[in-house]
Image 1 (spheres, rainbow, N blue to C red):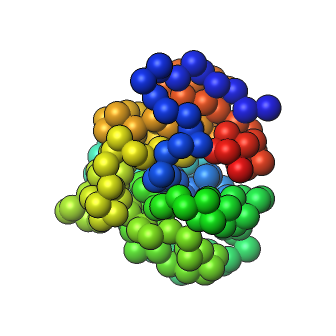
Image 2 (tube, rainbow, N blue to C red):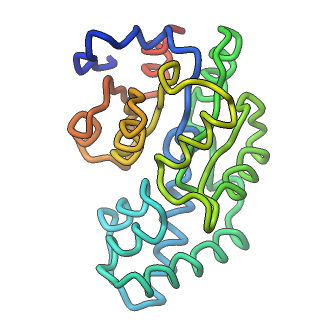
Length: 227
């Protein structure tokens, strides 16, 4: 069952927020197979040993930070690894490596039918997120905001871009994400975040970061959002 963390008294019920932002990787789509395969290829090419726990560090933060964490490498090498990763990802990843989370399409349709406005706020490069959303046939999102070189870097900046493009108030916005980065980025805008445990976050990570509620499936997330 979904778990509530005792939301602040001033916060409205989760089902009452008219705007819902979604992280992409690990929240909307299960991109873990693609991320693991490509990151493993890059780490091996640079001489770094790794295991599943190491690869999990790649899910959530911007790529450069993920490689720095996974390999303990300096900023210059992390940037080089990130560039290599993006080239391999673009050239080799196929749709069977980034399937929608089970029940996600139905959840998004239900939220739209309930009058909610939806957007993506991701640490993935914006062009990549848009392309993957097209492949997945996602039409429910008004805006897909992600990283843009020289313009946006952090999760908080992607959240800002989404709410600005939609011309909505942060006060009316709820975030859904699967890593602490989503919770922390939302908190910079005083936006509550619902944490979805989908495989990358370690137990307690989302609660410790300040998620107002957590769940372990899209079905539980749907219940939290009042569907």
